[in-house]
Amino acid sequence: MPAGKAQNVTTNEIQIYKMKKWTSLDQFKDFQFSIWRVTLSDNATEWKSGLCNCPSFFKEYICKHIMGMAIRLKFCKPPPSAKDIPLGEKRNRGRPRKATKVLLIQ
Image 1 (tube, rainbow, N blue to C red):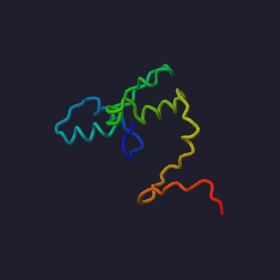
Image 2: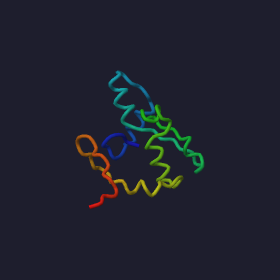
Image 3: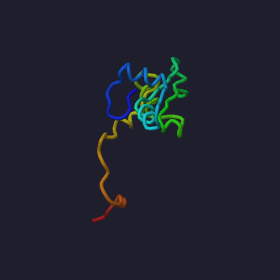
Image 4: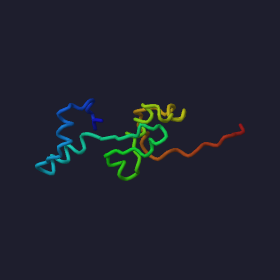
């Protein structure tokens, strides 16, 4: 799975990733963080034990790549509330407003 803005991974990039012959730390960093390697079980009930090499997985032991592949392979179903959240919207600046009173008598 490509990392960042890349849409696909070439076979040449995969071969370089598998050889693991780095000549400098910068080259290691570029290749290590350019491809996320996601490994899932064929068994639909064991998708949570999948592996990924992204930094988020090393901290949390689960990441969006594993969940995305599990949803794509129909191993799990996202909750309906996840579809209600708009994508790409930014929060307003500043502190959030206080909650208004529910019943106001006029």
